Length: 216
Ligand SMILES: [Zn+2]
Image (cartoon, rainbow, N blue to C red):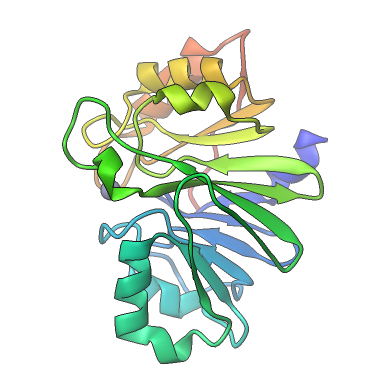
């Protein structure tokens, strides 16, 4: 079951994930090549490497719907509001929306011991439900207590350290969330390298299945 969904999940570098379901879903497009048009674009927060207007434009179609938090929403509306004909939906942590048959839960995403992503900003991770399979994109986060209550089948977690969890903290997060499959991200572009993804995988050996995606 997870084999099928995992084949549809593509890592385009950093925190950008594309899921080839119907509709095509992008998370945090950044430094990508123009590709399949997005049915839905999810933006976790307004840092330049997550809310990149230039990259959003590369996959924006005539009916693309954007789902994000208030700060990114403001930035997108100001810069390309008139181009986003499908609409821009703003969520806070704990809120949900259904777009084109995909239910999307906005969940908290913040730092515990660093200042880059304060809890007070109400920035987001997302859990999307694709044909009954729940796929979680964590955004820029540390391991946070709310993760104990997240229910998902696939968890895509940052592993680079510095602005987010280290590989070992991310492994602890995976143990708290207990997904069927964990995928490391947020390495290889600005911070972190493949060694972090390997360390994450090694720490979860025999406990949680890990798939390290090749950058496309
Ligand atoms: Zn950030």
